[in-house]
Image (tube, rainbow, N blue to C red; front, side, top):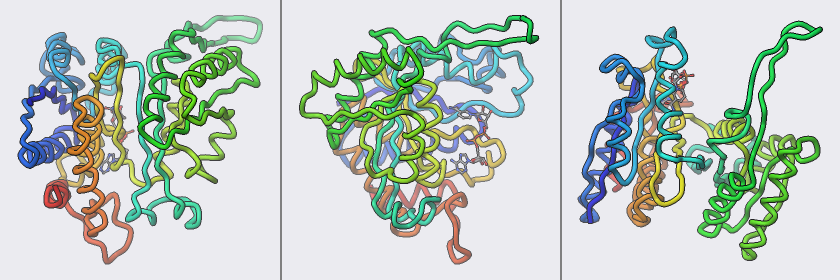
Length: 357
Ligand code: NAD
């Protein structure tokens, strides 16, 4: 069976880490007798340079014609002074809306070999972290009514948090479906003691929870969740929350697991189509130096195989290969913490993973 993958390499270290992920996909395809066909699409700063806009319609067409999209990163100082509507980051927002991607999945996994990188106390890190953030991606305060007015106190600005039942239901179902394939535990995070939108969020989540009696469901206020992620992260399995709270808390969860170069993500909608990308940016400070850690992009490819192509064995093989490479001491410079540890280049780290596929 063959699958079509749109590759958006993007800017900075994007092309370097996407090339690594592709090498791992090719080896996996060979081992398991699969065929992956790739089609490259432009987005971000390189698209602005080539055709004058961050997300050309041809790129959207290519993405829609494929089973999934694998993206590196977009952006860089070169394009920082452009007007907001033609900045590279517009490409990401455009892709999410054009492709109907309303849920962002962000796993946070503390690899045993990397426990020393966690800023957590040893006894907390030793219990392990294996959680999945399900963040609503296309609604809430980032998309609500906003404005600037002038009153007695001078200028005033406002942003609006608004969610419909339909938006909450679809993100809730995503979370419960995911939990069914994991440890069957969903925590919904809100601020229902203050916000009306959170009270509707809670009421709707409870209704969805009743459809999944085998999944343990609980609720947590966002301020408590911010604390629990640091003092007791092992208690979380699937965490579902709004766009704003998810943006902040998923970065906190990433930080407690160690390097930014290790964490993959997926943006998905209805059906199996999805966009997969490392959580890091284009890292212009190390672009072209061979220092980029390709692990997050490689793990994004594994997520893609599992979530968009149902190739679970192949995804497991890639994730195990990463774990084995890390256990064997393979490190890029962002992960080196002792003088005795030697840093591998992007290529070296990729080869270490390939050797365990
Ligand atoms: P960044 O994630 O690019 O870099 C932050 C720091 O982490 C840098 O020191 C960088 O060298 C390091 N780093 C990041 N990824 C790494 C990796 N794989 N291996 C080793 N080290 C790594 O964040 P930033 O500096 O705030 O942003 C740089 C550019 O990326 C900006 O233009 C920003 O808008 C863009 N950005 C894009 C995305 C995306 O494409 N989805 C996400 C975040 C930021």
